Each structure stands twice: as structure tokens, then as C-alpha cells.
Length: 248
Image (tube, rainbow, N blue to C red; front, top):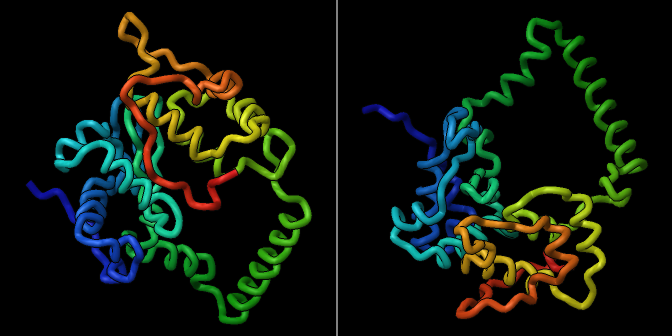
């Protein structure tokens, strides 16, 4: 059955992700093959184009790699300097993988057509005037953003990258503003320690109750109680290092 295709631009060979070797090249192509070319449903959710939903355990089996190895490789592709994809845990039901700049490389120059459409049919003079006004508006918008930067719910300049890395990993995404407030109160503990401890707890099913159900505390509660210090038999945190920009 015909299932379409995706564009494999030769420019990908210039990327740092491609230079990492055969295993990473295989994973990159595996990701590109699975990405939705249009919005498609998955477990009651609509997954947009440029993304795909996957259960990590099943994906590991199909790829023939351990979960720990796949997690490390995805982390490399997610963080700087690669930044090829983003990974989001959706309600602890599945992972949402998004290829950054997917539309830029897969569309038929839609962005270019959209730009030309705004001035199509206008005399050259009008096109120059429209472009000049747009450039002026862009400059004014940039100045306004510098003068009045967007505020986070806490009134600061926004969430830190280290907290965002924790938020991506935490399976229960509620009360983000409160969780960030709790995060900022933590002193003397590296972000890597907290995130690795959380990953270890998830790997060990630390949050599963006697009835077999998962019971995740709110992220703010988990942080307030210092739950990264929980003891888990036989499970160690990951050995990956966060890049400097993800350290607090």
C-alpha cells in the first residue's frame, strides 16, 4: 500500500547529529519515518504533523535497543548543540516526539508562498511600501519586547531551562507556576541530581501503589518534600550530564 514519503535533504549530512555516527543516523531516519505528515489521532489525542506519539517500551523493542540507551540518544538529539527534536511525556501514557523545523524542510515552500501572497497582484511600488511598513512594525515590536519582556506567572522573566528540563520529565503536569516557585527554593542541589533521581524513580515504578495503580504527587509537593532523596533498591540515576545552560 502506498504510504507516501518524506524528504531527506542532503543538508542533514552537515548537522552535528549526523556526524555522531551510524547509530544516530539510523535513529534520525527512524524518527523521520514515523513523523506524521498530517494530524492523526493516538489514544484519544490529536498528534500534529511534524510529531508522532510512541510508547517508549514498544519503540525500544522495535528498534532493538535498551530503554536506557534510547533515552541517552534522544537526550543528545534534544539538547544543545543538536536540538533536532523535542520530547514530551504526555500524562505518563506515551511520549510525544517533535522534529524541530519539520515544516521548514518538508513543506513545498509554503512559507515563501505565504509571503508572496500578501503582495501578489500589487504594483511594485505598493509591494515596497508594504515590505517597508512590515519591517518598521517588526522593529517596533522588537523594541517593545525588550522594553517590556513577557512575564512568567511568578512575575519574573520566565522559567529556567533547568526547571523546564525537570518539567518535561515529570509525569504529572499540574500547577507549573507553583512547582517553579518550589524549584527556586531548592538550595545546594544540582539540577542534574534532581532530574536523575526522578528518572530512576520512574524506571523503578517507585510511584506504583499496592493496588498496581500509579500515584504521582503534584510536582510542587515532590520538590517541597525533597523526594529526590528517596531510596530505591537496585536503581541508579543516569550517567548523562546536563549541558551548562540546564544547570541552575
